[in-house]
Image 1 (cartoon, rainbow, N blue to C red):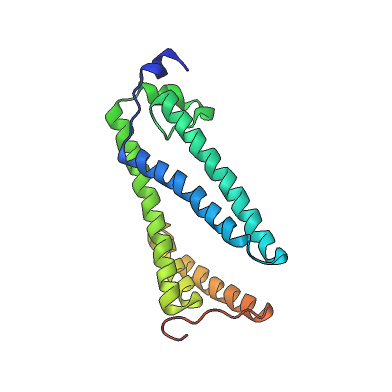
Image 2: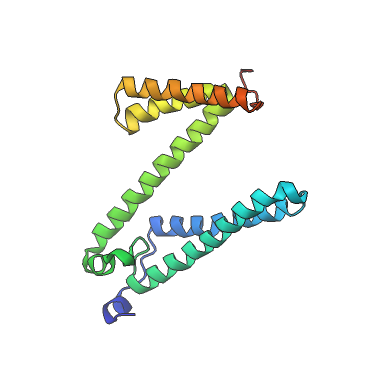
Length: 178
């Protein structure tokens, strides 16, 4: 650890605390899913155990790396491989907090998009939700033209319908019965 990094106090800003809560929560969720999959038949448990195993390992690795980064630089959102350590240590603490908060809200905004998509899918079904989500997301978040958004929505509905018919999938019914 460098002398300047040793002098840098740990900065437990709300963004850093939330990041560590997620870093702890995700391995717990993956671990619980793996534990549940252990009771399944062997062939049915192969994919869930593989995915949860990778998720568990990567989640714990991310937690360890973030904590080491926080201890060495005082900031959790530094990419030391790119050489950001010196740049962040020399920055004004208020600027760092503002940047971390901005990253936090960007992540929460995208998490909100995912929750909205799942909510619309629950109420209106996969086809309607995918079409509506793509139109709104492309238009407002991606700042694409209406034409591009509509083409994406129609393509998604065609792909979902084709997959459903060709693979003989049964989609769950929506709250509206579609």
